[in-house]
Each structure stands twice: as C-alpha cells, then as structure tokens.
Length: 336
Image (cartoon, rainbow, N blue to C red; front, side, top):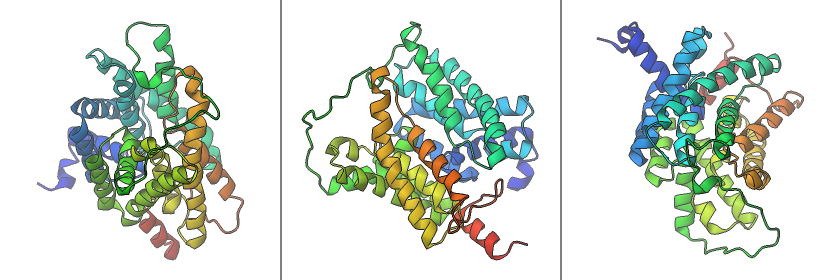
C-alpha cells in the first residue's frame, strides 16, 4: 500500500498533519522531518516527547474541530505552536501527570491565537510565526504565583539584573563552539542535548539543504554575536544565544525572501539582532520571572518582514506561497 493510499484514511491523514506540524517549528512542511524532530525530542526526554506529541495533536485537532482551512491544517500550520506549547510547560514547571491536561489546553489555545493572528496579520502578508505559542504559554504561566496546582521551576524565579556586576566569563574552547552550535538547534525546542541538535539538523536537511545550512549558520552567528558582546561562556555553550538566531536564519534565508547575496546579508543582520534581542528580552522579563521564549525571534523577524516590503533590493516571497528556499527560487525562475 502506497503512502498516498494511507493518507486517504482520516487517522493516517491526521498523523501526517501532526508530523508536519512538528516540522513547521522550523518552517519544514515535511512529515519525515517532523517525525525526526519528535525522535530527537524523545532521545533527550521521554516526558518532553510525550508533551510535544500531545501539544501538537491538541492544536491540530482543535483546528479541525473548529473548521480551520484544511490546507493550512494539512500543512501543519496549526500544529507547530502546539509542539512548543506542549514542551514549555514541563520545561518550566515541576512535572506531574495532571500537567498533561494543561499541555492539551495550551496546545488548543495556541490554535485559537493562531487564527486570531492570521486574521490580523494576514492583511499585511506577515506570518504569525511562533507568537501563538509564546502568548498562550505566557498566559498559562503567569498564573503560577496565584494558583497552587503547579510549582514553578528555578528557571522562572523573578530576579533583578545588576548592571556592572562581575561575571564569571569562563574559558572559550573548541567544545564551546561544538556544543553551542548543536545545542543552539536543539534549544529551539528546549532540548539541551548535542545529539538532539544534530538530529534536528539532519531532519531539516531531509527537506531542504539551504534551510539546514541557514539553521547551522544561524546558530553559529548567534554564538559568535554573544561572544563578541562578551557573554559568559556557559550560556553560549548551552546554545541559549543561538536558538532565536536559528529561527531568524531559516525564516530570512530563502523562506520569506528570495535568496540572493543581498537578502543573505539582510538575513545575517536578522540573526545578529536575534541573539542580542535574546539578552534584551531576558533582562526585560527577569523581574517578573517569565522567560522570553522565542519572542526575540518573533519581534526581530516581524520588523525585518515589515521593513523588507519597502526595500527595492529585498524581494519578498508572495504571502501564502512560501515553500523551501529551493522551491521559492524555482518559482522565481519559472513563475508558471
């Protein structure tokens, strides 16, 4: 039985949409890529893997039940925010089985926000990116100090940044670059694991060589930017300044703009600012104990997308037609 025949079955069609949803976390409309993403998450943590699957399923099923555009659902565009929404809660809260229901709620809520932002931003041809995940997760996390159902982890304890405070810079070695680049890819989905980062890179490569290249470049640029700005070595090695730049790199590197040397430089600027914005939003939100998540990537990329429409030397891909960088280049050469 062929794969196309299997997809005529609603159950297998749903599973395909779920896998594509996970793939779309890094702009890859490919079920195999999404399956490998899930595998990479499970390799690092079974708990995160289960929550990623539940969040993606909840987001996708909610879109189907509410009658969202079937093509968008099939492409995974209502699933990827659910993937991130599912992992974020056990990452920042002390996990317990009852949290699985909260994960499902967060995934479903991300779909509602996704529809709202598509309706709002669609007028300008700008994508929602991972904003639904961030907004849904913030709303479900802010309540943690008013309700006692879940206990916050140490990563979301409020703190006040101290300007000029001495920092332990640490020594930069070859392992800093090796671990930092790989973990930069892994941290897109909260995975502090070198092997998971490598699996993610291979997963992207399955669908697009150019996107895989820009993912690695983005992680490296984020790492180098943080080092130039004299960040301590530890967060750099953990990939914490790379993951937003990974998403900036893939998005700007041929997905939303036709790729040429000018748009490459434009994408490079977006990657650099993605890393700097990671630190800025981290400081901004630290007093209330909330993580920046992928908000730095969202804000910087939105600004570059809105601005790009007015620059003669950046050619945006028409809204709704964005594919892989390779597909977009073929479409540019042969519009028919």
